[in-house]
Amino acid sequence: MELTEHAYIFYYGIPIVILLILSTVTLKNNGRALENQLLAGSFILFSTLFGVEWYRHLAPLAVSPFLTNWVIGIATMLSLSMLMHVCLKLCEKHTKKRIAVPMWLLYSGVLVHVIIMLTPIAPTLADFSRNGIWIEREAPIYFAWIVSFVTLALTVDFIICLYAYMKTKGKKASRHLFMFLMTMLPFIIVLYVMCVLFVPTTYMPSISTIYMVVFLAMFLMIGMQRYNLFPQYARRYATMFERSPICKFMLNERFEIQEANEQTMKYLGGAFEKANFVELMERSGNMAHVQRLLDIVDEQGEVANEIVALNNIHTGNVMYLVVNAIKIQDDGEVFYYVMFRDKTIERQQQERIRELAFYDGLTKLPNRTAFMTQAEEAFMHRDGSGIVLFDLNYFKRINDNFGHAAGDEVLRATADVLKAFVTAPNMPARLGGDEFVVYVDESTLDVPVTHYVQQLRHALETKQLNFEGHTLRISPSIGYCSKTEVATFDEALQEADKRMYDDKSRIKQQTIIKGSMR
Image (cartoon, rainbow, N blue to C red; front, side):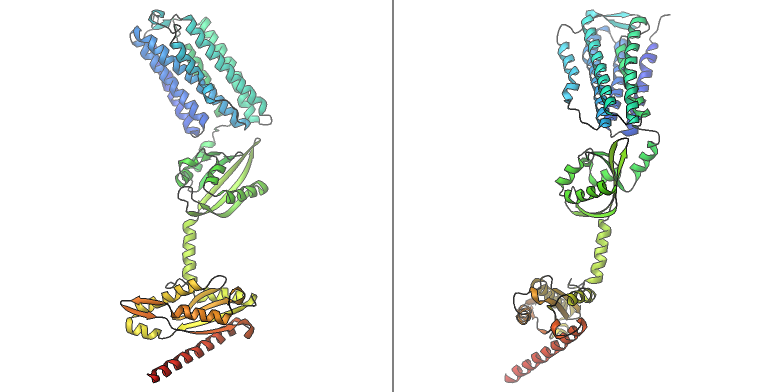
């Protein structure tokens, strides 16, 4: 029975559809893994090869040399090289060892093929003829080159799988994978030989080599799917992993990022994927904090709800993250599973609430609540503690004459003086109205406390501010009490308040005397 051109649908059309489906399935299962990308790419390349070969059989005979030499030949070399690359990546992934093979060496077959095509070895139009529905090629040296490279590529694949099998002792799933591949490689060779020797050319297209390579790619995919590279339950996990609102990613023991969900990619950017985590953290100045977390995970096996402040990789702004991480040992391999959520906005809201609760909204100084809590604690534990209390003379007159906006400006100017004059651990605060207070630790002062109080008075009195063309001045009445004079913090406040009013009376008396002398 002679075949008709309708047989092309069986020999070329059906493989094209199957290969495109396989490429889609491969990418859908784990599209971020390089070995999956290479395998899917080879499936797409094979489907292209079948399409070109289909066209070659329908086109005039004159196009066969070009398509065979420069399209089909190069694509065949490239697909075999990609499959060697897949085997190499599988070996590295399962043995956890980098294999120092230059990428150009894996793909050198493509370059050699191009060079051969520039020599008399390349098939010419005279080497092609029609036999039924097939176009046959009579170029023994070219055929020997193709067979030699295919044999070499399969041998390299077998050696890589054998090496990986020997280096994965104790890893049951990994050894099963490479044993499966080592078994299938000889089967492919035998199948190829049988097709060449026993199947009549009437029923077999001239690109039987491509069919053999396709079988190799399909067996690679079957092995990867069957032996724990993308098991069935992974689909459910992948869905939860990708759609989680929490940032999640996986590191291997070399701290290379293996997986990162969409939230992580959206949050940290595309540069995060397939990067070295340690290098990324070092560049962003976060390594010290991260190293502390890694040490805890290595020692305890996990980190739970740890809050860390890190620099944003892109903006450099500080962000607060709640981090959870666990160390996983699976079939002899070590992974770090990390989850984090951004607490920055929540932290800012908490800071804002704290600011409203403990800071005066007008002057941005600590308020009465904050001062009473912190200053009393310091007063109890430091022997040199003291309290400076003062209010502003003529403040009501400023409000009455110039309005409350002027009074607010005076209060802000007073706060500015305190912020510049008072240094930690001493603490200024606004108690309310026009009343201010300063906690003082006398041991931190460069001058006696009496001089310090006079310097503060001078700083306030020399502060001038212009309000709508009017020059306003600050006139304080000040009282000071040392811890050595009283027994409690409250008594110190009361004594400082009494002395402040004594100072106010003195200032008023001086004002009266000056007025009577005019």
